[in-house]
Length: 411
Image (cartoon, rainbow, N blue to C red; front, side):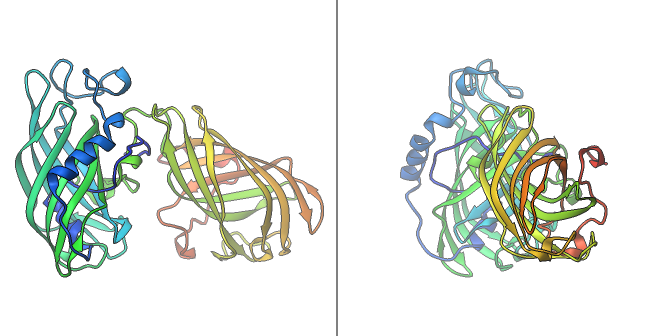
């Protein structure tokens, strides 16, 4: 399964875009206004000039052209099937989604292209990102969309209507007028912004809406094959050929000490990973949410307790190694299955990405309260979760807390 990566740093005003499917995006919104498309397009081009694939060879920084069939030193042929996700300012973290098919023809000189777009709306429960994602309604089709030499395009979708089954923000049917302003990022991704306004069930200006799309390996009709992590803004788009897996998502993080090497403390841990431009390294934000545990227990009750412990700008090197200096940490006794006492400790986490679904490593430091204890020899393991970990019933009952317990990818 392809997991979207994060970070082709595009400096442009946020805004999704890309098809009638985008109409779904409109529904989620509620105010009025439709900016002048030509002025908006020029603004967008100016803001993203330094980040686009725009040298004469069609690649960024003169690197190798990661393209499909195209002219000799020209545009990438973007023909294929994509997961297209867009968000509005009404709810910037709940994307509308479409399986989008592109059929592109690049001119012989590689300096322009035309493409047909087909946006197939995906069903989404209100508030959901991954369920059920089945095809719903008819695809929204647009033909003869023009691309310039830099991979920029504009799609006037006109008046769009999308079923409420594809609207995860309110669940209402959507009607909107939409204008998509997009660009090719590389051979497996494009992104951009959306303007226009929702006209029903309410009126809402779509300024600030954004979208991103990543290529799929199949036709997108099987919900189980769709990625669970994916971009919906330009700054979330993965590099063309990253050497590291994208570890963005939610994990069960379990650690043990030599005091009791079989009774792990546990945290529902959210990771936001961003790639460096070359895809060879990156930075991450880790938020550790302590889970309650009865003394001696591994699986009960595992409810959220205390505030999460968050650390930003954690460097991840090209080998996938990272270090988190957590400083002085205080955790409630409700999350301590060894003694049930409140804990105060100084902690340093030294970890490695094992694969896209797992991490592991060691901890150093010392417990300073309720007693003094050297944490040398402490270990941790982390495995990807299917949700945010807030439902104890969905948490795994078997999980790693040492590197030798981590399952292979797909295992």
